[in-house]
Image (cartoon, rainbow, N blue to C red; front, side, top):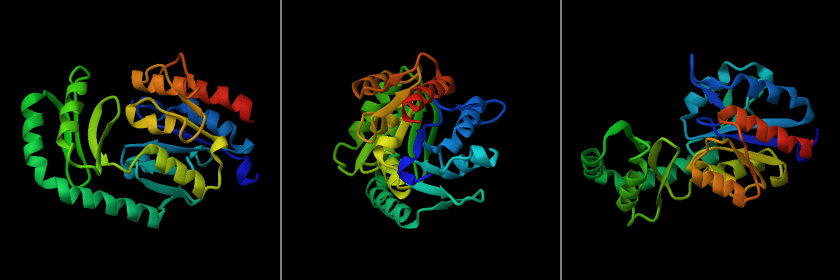
Length: 260
């Protein structure tokens, strides 16, 4: 099938398309459906803030016909499937993203001890990760808005930084990173036009790919954050009545009825 006739589906993972027990994995019904429409030219990619290695582990246990075409990780990196079960980095793109991240970290990392002390004195922490790649905290849903306000204050004099997050985590990223940009670049690399792209997610880090800037075919499950639901509705997309993977599958079925 010509590339321009293919359909590319971008799926967020947590809260959108995975199950957690007995291990982190793609929802079985969802990937089985994606495999069933594969011969009609439908491909899919993971677009998540999880690390590439974690995403590759999730993909590794899927049968060949269910594997994603690419892994889009941390709102910055792209790894393409080589057809033999391996995901290879898009070297020039990924190197540029790494350079931007390191330039930002060089400027703000000396401030981390001060920022950590402030966060850890004001909030009840559930988890945190602070290292060469991440400055991220998870607190209760009730405390998350206040945490994001505090972290936004941290970077107010850092034009190259932004605050992002999903429904649980809040973290700092380079201002040029987004799920929209990696999805656009991936579609470009695969020669798939925007009017053949479907994007689905549930967290505020998904809004850039769900607000109509990448594709008009956008959707979210019922459990999506209120800001996501509003962005999807503003873009003319679909808000499912079902939660998580069942909701994502309902959105996919709706759009494929019109696209296939």
